[in-house]
Length: 355
Image (cartoon, rainbow, N blue to C red; front, side, top):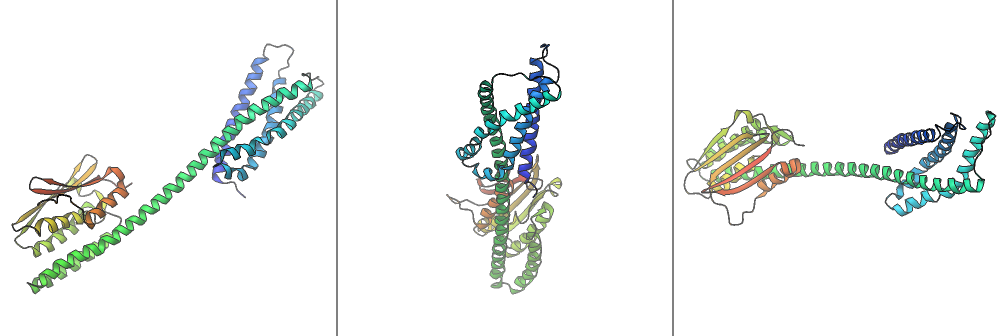
């Protein structure tokens, strides 16, 4: 069975650190005995090489068992306990192992390997094993914990992405019937006073719905296409409120190619008609401004009207805010404010693709 990606990365990192560690140990041993004429040049290589070989065998064994112990990373005391429990056995086999190798090499070279008394060696080497083993156990714990944190973070980001996509799909699905209901309500009101106009507007509504359904099925669109949809909607509403509303379009040419979420702006214009034109007994002018502001796109809808003391955004504006938050976070905003005799709604968002 092939090792897991996390295990492979950890093993590679351990191998790199392990190599550096033993190279440094060898360099220190050579430097310590460089001026000692009784020490042959190859002896430090045998000493450190034997220690490295036996220690590497134990490291290999511990990595083989890592898959069983990694489930205890969330309980550090138990994880360390499992590893530390092997130190007495390591100490008992480490000393005989390295000194057997050294004596064997020296016998092949006809040299005599002299060392301290065995009682001293066992005590000294056991202390070294305890210190070095504890150090490497901590290193392994750090690497495995970091790998686990990365894995869980990636899983969390994936879940958040799927959740955001589900929420966006729900918001788009919510916007379609909401848009259809309000537009049909406009046609219904005309049926009572002018059947010919209502019939003509139904045809225009069919074109509008066809375009809106196509656009709404997409995640993003250009400002140019979004404005084409808004103009169709504005035309139908101007037919309903004939003589009571004018719509002024002021769109910068360099803003037309900006990418925005599909059907994002329609609720702003709908809000201006419902709360500005419908409640007014005098003609109302609606001004739509779209322009780039550095790396962002700003779209403003201004109309005469008065906000309620505690304005509560309807489904459309709430929908817009949620979509902006999901797609751009703090990089986008939707504001609704009173500016003198006018109500101003403004969307600011990055001019590129959503992140």
